Image (cartoon, rainbow, N blue to C red; front, top):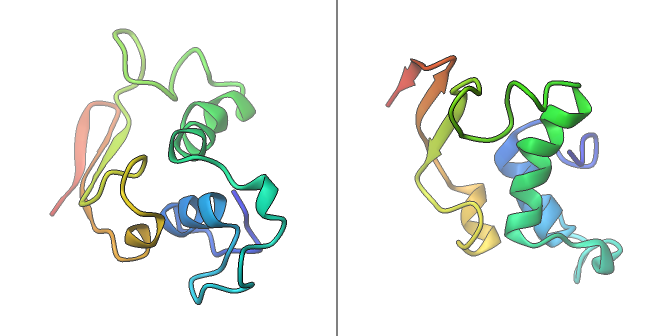
Length: 104
């Protein structure tokens, strides 16, 4: 993530990774804009990239048979929605180990 540049919220982190800005749009044009990630790259970093960093890539990080069923459903598409929409996105459902732990 971009913590401590952005707070630990994954939605704000995805936004910061895609824009290289804080929630107020600063700095204008983004800090080191050449380092912006696409929506797909940012989501990968927060999912399978995070699993790899935790030495858990064989257990989680992607949705496929045999892996932990850990996922969150959002009110916006984190890959294709405009980055700014991530700041207002809502968590609709969270599943950990195949069990619903947060139903909205």
